Amino acid sequence: MVRPNEEVEALLQEYADLIAITGGEAFKARAYEKAARAIGGHPADVSHLDAAGLRKIPGVGRSIAEKVVEYVRTGRVAVVEEKRALIPAGVRELIAIPTLGPKRAMALYEDLHISSVDQLADAIEAEKLRDLKGFGERTEENILHGIALLRQAGGRIPLSTAMETAEEIVTGISLITGCEHCAYAGSLRRMRETVGDIDILVAARRSAPFMDALTELPSTAEVVAHGTKKTSIRTVDGVQVDLRVVRPDAWGAGMQYFTGSKAHNIRTRTIAVHLGLKLSEYGLFETEGGRRVASRSEEEVYARLGLPWIPPTLREDRGEIEAGLRGELPEVVTERDIRGDLHTHTDLTDGLTPLEEMVAAAAARGYAYYAVTDHAPNLSMERMTDEKVLAQRERVRSLDGKHHGMRLLHGTELNIGPGGEVDWPDEFLRGFDICVAAVHSHFTAGRAATTRRLVRACENPQVNIIGHPTTRLLGKRPGIDADLDEVFAACARTGTALEINAQPDRLDLGDEDILRARHHGVRFAVDTDAHSIPQLAYLRYGVGTAQRGWLTPDDVINTWPLRRLRRFLAKDGRR
DNA sequence: GCCGTTTTCGGCCCGACTGTTTTCAGTCG
Image (tube, rainbow, N blue to C red; front, side, top):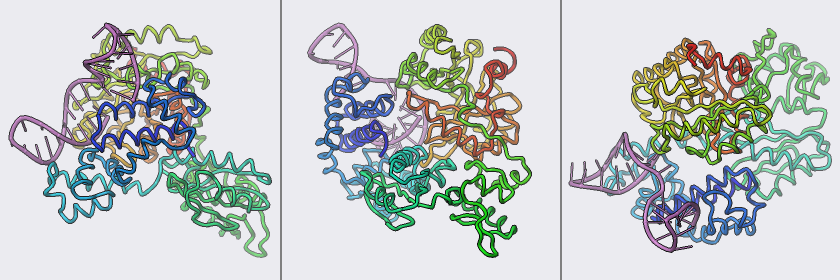
C-alpha cells in the first residue's frame, strides 16, 4: 500500500520494539531502529535492491540486508513472526502511549496480563497498578493523560499516510478501461492535518469494474460494503477507503459534494436554494421541473452559484463563501511558488544524508536557493561543535551555485533555552546566513515563562525563523502553552518569520494558528525540516497547511526572490 | 546488529527530566 521502503521501515521498527519489550540487547534494538530510519529515508526503492545494494545503505549490514531480501521475496520475515508470537500486538500498542515505554509495557503484560490500551485504562480505574513496582499515583495520571491524547486522534491517520494510500489507489483505478476521471476527495483533498477515511471518486458509465477492483486490491483486508454506487474497504493498515462512481457528466458535482467540508456544502446548498436550485452529488438542478443546469465541472457548479472556483483547502466555511461572493478570495500560495527550503538537515547532525546529496536533490526540485540548518550544540545528543559547523560552512560555500545556479545559505537550527537564550553568542551567529530557532526542551515551563521565552527569541537580532513554533506532535504531544498572540505580535514587530513545518506529524504552525498570526502581519516560512531526500517532498503538506491558513505568496518569505529574502534575513541590517 | 578500526572486538548519541525510590530506572529528544 505504501512505498516499499516505508513498509520495510515499519517492519524493522516493529522488530526493534519487540526486542526492546522482550528485554533484548538494547544496542541491537537501536541498530534495527537506525536501519529502519535509514531505509525509510533512502531514495531508491529497496524492493529493487539485492543484499549487496542494501548493505550500501548506512546502518544496514549483513543480517538486516538478509531480512529485507527475505521480506521482499516472501512478504514475511521468520524471526519477526517468532517474536510476534511471543508478544500480543496490543502490548506493542501500549508503548505508543507517551511516557510508557517498553520496560513498563512488559511489566504490565507479565504481571497483570494487560495487552491493550483499553485493558490498561480499566486496570488503572480498578486501581490494579498501585501494587506494581515502578508505578505510582503520578504514573497513573500520566498514563491516563497519554491515553486521552492517543484517543484524541480518534483513529484518524496522518495526512501523508492517507495521501500515499490514496495516490496508489487512484493510479491503479485510473488504468481500468472506462475510467474517465479518478481522484481523491474529502478531507484529504482539503489537506486536513489528519484524515478519517479516504474518499475516492470515479467518473465512468459502468461502476462494477471499479467496485470489484477496490475489493480485490492486495492491500484490502476487509470489505465493509459492496454496492453499485459505493464500495468501502478497510486496508491492512486499518484505513477505510470509500469509492464512489458517478456518471461522467456529474463529475464536477460529485467532486464538489465529496470534497466537503460538510459546513461548506451546507452553505453552497443554501445558496442554491435561494436561487431556486437544488445541489446534490449528481448536479445542480432547477427546483421546478428538475432540469440540470450544471454538473460537469466544479467551476461550472460554483459559477452557477455566483462563486469563483474555491480551492479545496479553503472549503471549511471560514469566510471563503463571503470572500468568493465579493470576489476577494486569496490567491493562495502553491508548491510552484516556493523557491527554496529554509530548514533542512544533513548527516552532520541527525539527518541521514550527506550535504552534497541533499543539495543535489534540492537542486533537482528546481529550487533557486536552499538553506542547510543542522542542529546547534545545546542539543547535546547531536554533538555539534564550532569546528564542525565552520567546516560545513566551507563545504557549503564550495557547492554554492554549482547545481543549476542554486544558491546555498548556511544556517543552523538553534535551541531556544528556558530563558529564551540560544546556543551561540551574537558574534558567532552573525557568520550564518540564516538562523532557525526552535524549542526542543522544557515543554511545560508554564504559560508566562514560555511566552517570554519565545518573545525573547524573536527579539534576538540573529533569529530569523521560529521553527515548529508550538512543538506539537499530532496525536502524541500537545503544543506548548504560550500566549500565542503575544508571540505573533513579537514576530511581526521584530521581522521574525513563523515556520510552517511540513513534517506530517508536526504541521506546525497549524491552520488555525496561521489564520490568527496572519492578522498580526507575520511572515511565514514553509519548510520541510527534511532529514533525508524523500522528506524534501513533504513540502506539499506544508503548502497545503499554508493554504488552509489563507496565505498568499507575499506572506511566505521562501517564495520571494533571493534579494528580497536576504533583506528580510538582515533583520536589523547586521547580516 | 553495525561499524571501523586501534581491523574480528568493543564501542555504539548523551544528558535531562520524572517519578519512584532512598540511589536509580525508565523515557525522551
